[in-house]
Amino acid sequence: MNKNIFRAYDIRGHSETDLDHATIKKIGYVLGQRIRGNQHDSVYVGHDSRLSATKIQNALVSGLNAAGVRVLLLGLVPTPMVYYATKTGITPNGVMITGSHNPKDDNGLKMVINDNAVSGEELLTEFENQAEIEQSERSFEEIDLYPLYQKEINDKFRLKKKIKIVLDAGNGAAGVVADAIFKSQGFETISINKEPDGNFPNHHPDPSKEKNLEELKKAVMDNHADIGFAFDGDGDRVGMITENGNSVLADHLIMILSKYYLQKKKGAIIFDVKCSSQLPTLIKKYGGTAIMEKTGHFNIKKAIKEHAAVLGGEMSGHIFINQGWYGFDDAIYTAVVLARIVSDADQSVSSMIEEFPKTFSTPELNLNVDDETKFDMVEKFKDQMQFPDAELNTIDGVRVSIGNSWGLMRASNTSPKLVFRFEAESEEDLKDIKNLFELNLRDIFPDLELNFN
Image 1 (cartoon, one colour):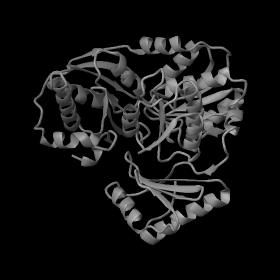
Image 2 (cartoon, one colour; image 1 turned 90 degrees about the horizontal axis):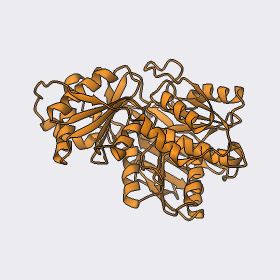
Image 3 (spheres, helix red, strand yellow; image 1 turned 30 degrees about the vertical axis):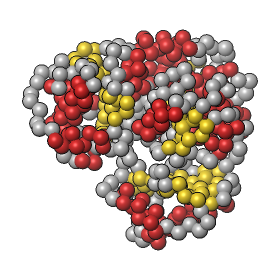
Image 4 (cartoon, one colour; image 1 turned 90 degrees about the vertical axis):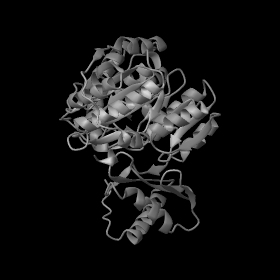
């Protein structure tokens, strides 16, 4: 058994070598015991479009049943619909089978027990102490949650001005649902790569990577659309394209939403360490409280609950709306809200973005490293790095601020990578802060190839 599948946010690994039947069944049993310990007897289970989904679902259901837990199968759905079920249904427990943006042969579990996100790390000791599970027959009930989900979204909004929208789900789990929701809202909707296909034949469903947005950009321009949205494989992250075919930084998505919601209700906005330094400035301008948190949906959700936050967001495109919605990361609902803001405004998306202060930044940059050593590498970097006259933030890796420039290094919790991001107020300063990090990396890890991707 590969212990590395028990990660800081969820469970994730290779569907064949790591997530075999016995492992998933035992995880299901451990989750079932937790559910029973909370005096509950049922759990919602959904899955994305990955080819290994059915195999993993069968093993998971067996383990949950063996623990005496009734399984309510939602079928192929985006992750937000599992979260929605736990908020509105008969049980506050849910498991989503998804590999999110990982390679197509990976898979995993995102878990909610008693309305709280559960990390993989929390389960490791219970898993190791659990004996093998007795054989049991699988038993489940199939549930169609879509009508309720659609109705609640439609009850919240009325279209004032019809605009044209292009959606790209990358053949993930969000395509069919998003298309139906936007059409039911009255938007002129064009969907590409809508049909679920675990081979992801057109591009990988990760909207945080610019190369995955090329097809959407072209579709927006070719169709003279007002806006475009891209979803990740399980529909909990969103990317946005302007009418000019330009991608919008997640920083700016969070700024648009912060401005919108803080004018309705003052409160905290949670954002992760990868976000722009301009974001807290905007939050404070509109009367909100800016709170930086560790990266990861698990951490953002906990902080939203702790601070009763209005909104949360990550630079990766996870957006958590907690004003008039339920505080979980829902790319489809977020896209509807953003489309409504654009529809109601007398300006284009690009002109909205131009109102924000101009900075120069990199996207998320990655270095491929060994999964076993990535956290040790971050600690070694923190111990040996040399940044004169810098302010340091170490809540998640290390964020180094020098004047109006900053750089971040952290270990990914979902894949064998080191994660970097840089921002400055000029191109020259951006180059300088990036060069300082590279100099430190070369000194501390002389054998490390600095091939950022």
